[in-house]
Length: 381
Ligand code: AMP
Image 1 (tube, rainbow, N blue to C red):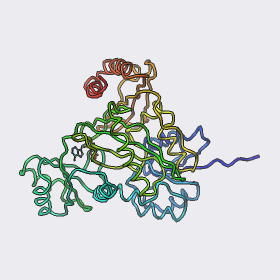
Image 2: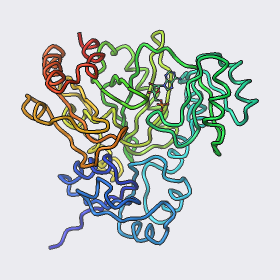
Image 3: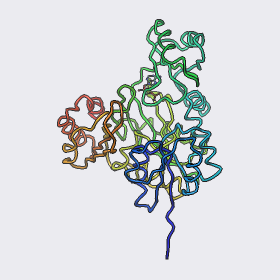
């Protein structure tokens, strides 16, 4: 007797697609990944179709071969996503992607659901920028509305003399800019949440995040001492998901400023600040995303204890210090080293904060990563 296994198509073949495929395999799900580069790291664990986002002949083949399509990359052109919707089931819907692709639309939506944001003004000309600086004040951050990630496409303005250089750096952007007030936040947290095709909504515990040069460096979950923020943060995530009719996993990145939550951005996909859930939660973000988009019941998003994730940027440290530890987990994405590139991560788990501290201190010392671990260790103290 034959049995049909579902095939989940993923647009984008990076580490997120790779971890989705690894999580989906035990559920009997097959994968097909599309990426424009031959050595996309997901191709080591799932078949790859090589195509760019406008290669509709190859995408036609992709659409025929998958039961459901999803994304590892939010900047798939909305036009491609809409084209795909005519041919196969696509989750999340292109509308969610379109909102998350545009910082102005995203922040406007945050306001509509009652989530405060840093002050912001749309900027389309040098004169707009002058006016925006007068309105928002300094310091401020000029960002491209589209295609920015990991701190790319951003310029910090500290004094009025920075207006010219900021405009020279980003003014040529075809899709417009946004000026945001710089928020001297106490901390950054994210809500990683999932909504099923039937509307079931679940969120993992809040995660606290530290960035270096705009790139995530360390995540700690559950965020220490954040119990009082969780209800509001998860409420905003739920409102966002319901407003967008969202299906799948997403992340809502928040600043905590003077004890209040401010919305920074939404990622319409599994997220780097949820990698700890692979070992640190009853169900990982990757498994729940696969379940959600295929219409399966969602799994428990509770934490098993406390977890800390180190992101490895540029190149990988020696794995031995992590591999030899208790409840310590190594992830090598199979990528070539390159400055600024996310090449892997490690997650250390423990039953309580004191034990996690010891484990993190030991690994950080062995790898010479004390500076990377320091802010999270202070938060754990
Ligand atoms: P983004 O790509 O907008 O998430 O920015 C990357 C990182 O830069 C954030 O995670 C923050 O650490 C920092 N950042 C972005 N926007 C602001 C802001 N308005 N005020 C202070 N820090 C910011």
